[in-house]
Length: 330
Image 1 (cartoon, rainbow, N blue to C red):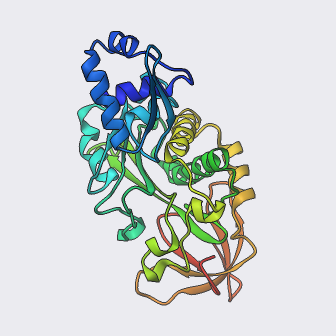
Image 2 (cartoon, helix red, strand yellow):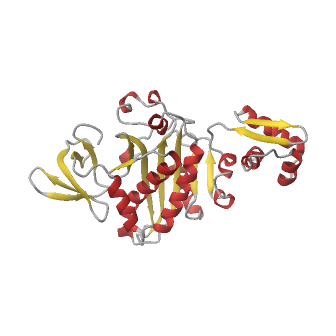
Image 3 (cartoon, one colour):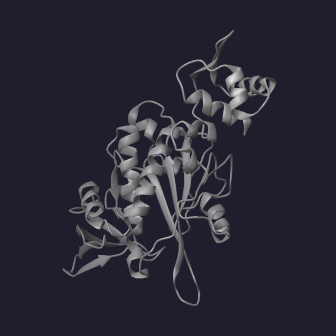
């Protein structure tokens, strides 16, 4: 942690910071400070040093670490964020820890997932050093019948964070895929824990995977027509820590808003969802042929109202189906 502590101090100012000041602030030796600076330089950080002035951070690589986040997120908030180099799945890790009394708002994020999870048992491609893989523990204080709209709230929170951090205009493909240029940019997976006897929801683990700095060649060949990344959309690399900062803020806001602030989330969702008005394929059972329908509207409970070819209508709910466009991903 010494390296991250030193980085946090250097990141917090545009001026030089003396080795003596860092040593005193962290309660470590000057030699330990020098060793930390050497370690940071080896990882790609550009740090200037001048006699009698100390050290100054010039530039930093795209890394997710406590030191990187310390200059962007309040130290008290950072205490509830667990940062890992690798993990099988951030959702799995947080679910395993959930019953240890972790507070609502606890986050697990990792640079790499060995077994990233998507909806309906699918995998989520999670290459090292180029994406954001983050899980957020929410302990909602609401009746169980209101929890079905949570994933839509999350889609809004993620979309807002990308607008602020990256200046892009994401779209929400019902129910929870975030798109850019008609291709998938973000996957969201919400998993509930329920008390068996009472049926009370004890926690929701919200998993979010964002394709940030992937090139098209980083995706499996079968996904290259369907997937994209922030850097592909913008034409330049983006610091993942900046996105995480906005993501944490929006998810913390969601924690306060859910489910009482429905109107604002519903308005945003409707204005950013390109599905109504399109002809879509509805997959209700994995492996079975889809049913063609016209998407009519997003209802007040975030369901998707569709009209089938025989004229009947149905409100589709998030856990039941998958949809695809008849001529493409949307």
